[in-house]
Image 1 (cartoon, rainbow, N blue to C red):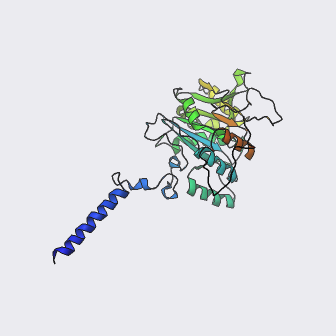
Image 2: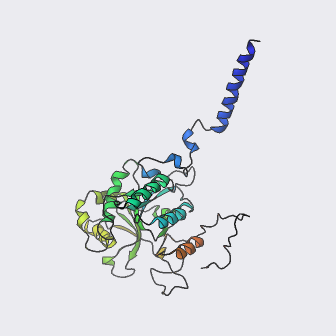
Image 3: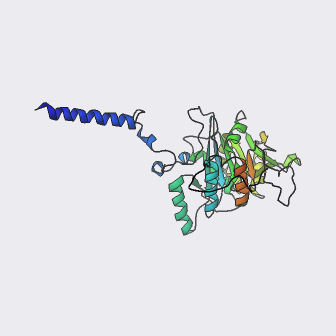
Length: 320
């Protein structure tokens, strides 16, 4: 009969439509099929969409955006892998976005150029600055001065720098910045602590400045050659000389150097045992210090029992 082919066609169209609506129920938003962890959604040139960025809690308005640059070197592959785990497994900040990026200078070695390229493809969280790898010869300036142009389309409210032996707790960082000035802000751990206030600067464990300070650095090229001391000392000196050392926020004792009972070192104003309200922990120089720190801050809470593995996280574990 003539109507049978037509009926079959109509039935096929209806079934296809039902399947499509089940798979894509949200108005055909095909891009949402690729979740942030998928290598299929790598952004070509925008570090603002790295796969390990820490977005705000779901469906909440963004009140502040923070960029945190981790200064490291190309060959530190294991440390970057550990840091990606440490930051990916953190609770997300509330009403805030904290983007974590690794900051490198120009990559010279063949193996590093290739392997770092693979990291960029896989994670999209690396910035390569036009500078020579160094400790105190201008990498800090290269990073801060480049940020305004790199992120002109979606500028950050605050920009920070930290070491690869520091663990920032990003939700605590966001909360500590909430309500702070967004002009001439300088946030971190003042050192030397409780001494020589006229010479204090934020410790290199990590510090954050407001967007206007970063824009001022980018617009002041003479700072590039103004480095006669450690870079973090020089940075504080730039702000003082430039009249930007105004809204200074000291996070002592919530930022500190790592300490535990088996160390041959005394507790003092910058080094002490872990605190639940910590913003950042510094001097995580080896795997054991990282492991104890991450365990203290419950990074392992998502670990589920399984017949596939036997791992004891209760016995013979250091307790604060």
